[in-house]
Each structure stands twice: as structure tokens, then as C-alpha cells.
Length: 121
Image (cartoon, rainbow, N blue to C red; front, side, top):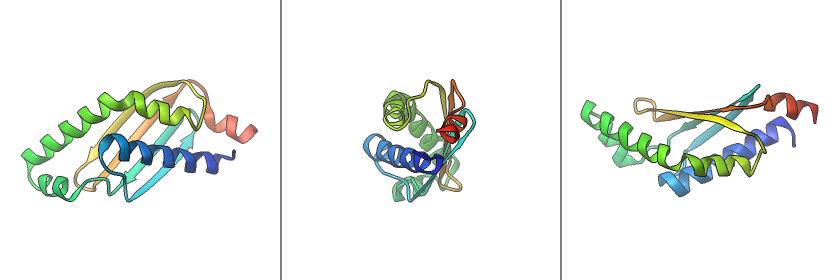
């Protein structure tokens, strides 16, 4: 698989994870493989009710807390979805949500340089 094909497959896997474990998928998703990192940007993943909740500070705090807790408790499933696409050792997974832009960023750090492996093959 090429780097672009791998990034597309990873986007599909993360979208599937979001639908199955977080309740809904994003409107847009983009995945980049940069050396030993996988960077995933999701846009439009908040439901209408979550968007309404995010209109005040208390709602933003609550939404971030719930989304973070959901993600933390289901991270092992995300790893499984990622490993279905690429056979890599994942060192850590980080995630953050912006309620202002309705974006979510997921960053995976890997034990090896995946980008180099894909370019060589």
C-alpha cells in the first residue's frame, strides 16, 4: 500500500471507530503519516445537541469532560482499528477537542518510522 492509500484506510478505520464507539462519525476526516506519528483531524463530529451545549462555558467543560472520558475508555478499541490497517507498535495516543471549531485532533506516536517504511515498500 502507498502512503496515501494507508492514510485513506486509517481515516476509514478512525471514522468507523467514531461511529461505533463515540456515537457518530465526522463530516470530514484527514489523516497524515509523518515519520513516527499518525495525525488525524476530524471536522464536524459534534451532534446538534452537543453544539448547543457548547454555547456556554459550563457546557463546554461538560462536553470536553464527557468526550475525553469516552475516548479514554475506548482507546484500546481505536488501537485495534489502527492495527487492522498497519502493523505498528503504538507508544501513545493523544486527543483534544475544540468545541469552538468542532474539530478533534488525534495523534498517535509509534515505535518506528512508519512513513519511511511506506516509502521504501
